[in-house]
Each structure stands twice: as C-alpha cells, then as structure tokens.
Length: 401
Image (tube, rainbow, N blue to C red):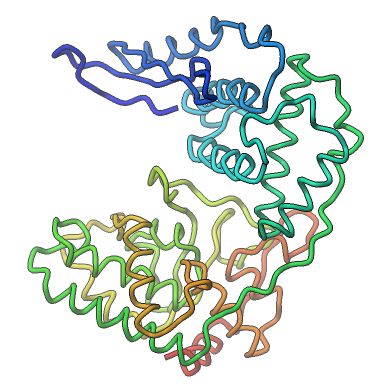
C-alpha cells in the first residue's frame, strides 16, 4: 500500500488509496483517505478495510471481480503488516502485491468473460479448458501459466472463505498443466556482436554528450542513452536479469577478480529495490541471498568512464526506466535485423546461457551464475565452488566480443 505525502487544501498531509467497491461496468472503485501523519494514514486504511461494507455478499451472482476486490483488501493489510514489521510472516512487500496484480490481469485477459466470469460456471470442464487455452491458444510460458493458475486458485479459495461457492474446485485445482515448453530462439553470434557494438556506440555517444558529472542523474536524453546502453552492456556480459542490473551499486563490482555481486533487484513498475531471495546453492564467498557472477574485463573502461570521482561508494548506478531501456533495445535490434519476436531484456540472458552451454560448462554452474533455482535440486542450502569462473569468462570474451 503506497502512503505518500501530499498537500490537501494547502496543508501538508499523507494520503492512501484503497479499493471501495465496484462500478456497474465492473471497474473497481477507489477511495482516497487523507491524514496528518503516516501512522494515522495506516490506521485509517486498516480501519477502512475492517469496516468495509459487506454488501458484496448480497449481490447474488458473484464474479471473479468481486473476489478480486476482497483479495486486494487482504493484500493491502499484508503490505501494512510488512511495513510495520519487516519480519512479519503475514506481511508482503508492495512489489509482491504488484506482481499479484499483474497475474490477475493476465488471468482476466485469457477468460472469455474476463473479470466478469461468474463463479457458478466454474467446474472441471471449464478449468480444463482454461489450462489448455493458456498453453495452446495464448502461448503462455510455463512460468507464466503457473503463476496465473495459482492466482485463479487463490481467487477460488477466497470465494470459498466468503461462502460464495461450495467448493467443487478442490477436486480439480491440483491438476497439472500438460506443458511442452516452447522453443525460444536466441540471437546468433553475429547478431549479438553487432548488437553489442551498437550499444557501445550509444554509450560513448551519450558519454561524450554529457558534460555534467554523474551519468544517469542529469536531465536530457544523452545521460539516459548512456545509462540504458551501459546497463544492457552489463547484461550482455553477465546474463543477469534487468532488475538485478538496474539495482547495481559501485561497491558490487570487484575488478581485481572480475566479478560482480548480485544481491538485490529493482522492480520495473514502482522502482523499489528489494534484496534477492536465498538460492538453493551459492558460491563459497557469497552471503545468503547473494551470488557472485564473473564479468568481462571489456567493461572496465566504460565502467571507469561511467563512474566519476564524486559518486558515493554505495550509490546506485542506474535510475533509467525499464521502458527507456526497452525502447533503445528495440531500436538497436531493428538496426541489426534481429527479429522482433525475440526482442526483450531477457534476450541477453538466453544468449549467455547458450554460450555457457556451447562451452560445455556444467549445468549446475550455469544455474548458479544466472540464479536459476528451478534447475538446481538440492535439499536445504549449501555452498558451491566455482574455480573456473576466471578461465570461463576469458573463453566467453573470445566468443562474444
């Protein structure tokens, strides 16, 4: 739940927006509450949820949208719990709630009646059709299918708690999706090298055009061009996720050992930065929830140019938006004739993974470096030695630059 400072009738206050019913067209109503302090705002929001009108119970024919409103209130309270006590087991981060909302949007996008789908029509046949459509008609990835299906189950479970359905869905909600992973193409080596050259040119152009100190923290398009290009140059070298690259700080880089420390990620929606979850395995020198990734020496020179003397040691390197990076990426990919259907910020990740595989790097080592928990089956947590990181990065440099 976002509580923000504001001015109301000339007075400095805090405001919070909460769900407050639904319009006849199915859109959610919202109410904005104003209070003098952040604490009062939290208490008002909590009281609002507790005293919310229960008229939804008397609507008659309930829809998934009705359940969604109730889930939103649950999520808002959990966000409040997390803000008040970061260790609260019944709390969630705002970024987690944002992901839930994305899953809801994806779910409603594949249903014939969307959010207006009536609970009474949901049965085993309907559920089977829903699973099949995600896999075949809408071509969802395995991960996306899993998240969307889990969200539908959450909605149905909430409807049960509200006594809006007599639970027939327990008999079928555990069915697994008969999923054959789709083959996602990667860039060719030639395309990748040309793309990197384009990003490098944009970086130096933005760097030379910027005469104001810290790149990425000034107005104008050139600093953002420089930022966007350098962020994706790091992705190209390491295969890390966009959010992980966007959250990097100066102190995360160890140029003596040519490694970068990954321990946090920036949400592309609200730009909040959160620590990464603990992996099943980690490199011996890494802390829990942290991984140490080899990085090419080719980035030392642009890194030195990007970071100026007055940058604080803990300063976050990037402030550029995900949208700006994606715009530049599409522009450069079009220029080097990379098909649009494979263009996204994960393309660097797919490319680096394919390069490690070509080099014969052990699958477990690849999983550790790129942070793939689902490919590492271990009981509990453990540490992992990566003695070939330096030699592997040199071999990688020869292949991709």
